[in-house]
Image 1 (cartoon, rainbow, N blue to C red):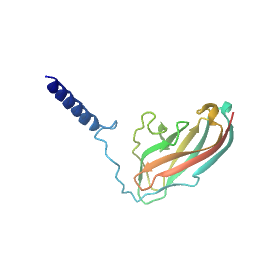
Image 2: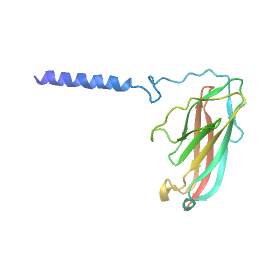
Image 3: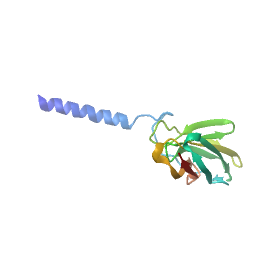
Image 4: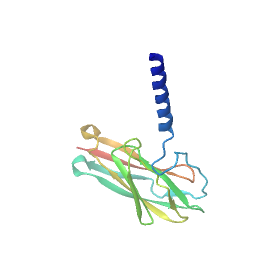
Length: 165
């Protein structure tokens, strides 16, 4: 009798694992990898920004990065994320705002799936919280914002800041 119960329990667990692995994505459908194929290209004149010295007590600081599609076709922005929880970013394309987005694995990180037409620009608004790491977070810090797209390699934007108490 115990072998039958163990066999049934193992079967239920295996079935539950299969159902969980095949769950739909938040946008609908099964999660599948992105397909490249655009001849568009996104770039930024300014890829790195220096906030200089920022006090934890002064609060958040922000910076706008302008990105542009310099290619022949539209580029679809697939995802955007940051390298640390202390940083968040929003994307503005054609008057629509997406985000804020943060570090992967720390909250819901949906796909964006928004096209930037050939020759069009978008704005990435980056916000850094200098107090996010507490007293241990003082000193020079470098963080990144990664923009995945269907035109090839992700676009990486970054900033440095010297955090003081």
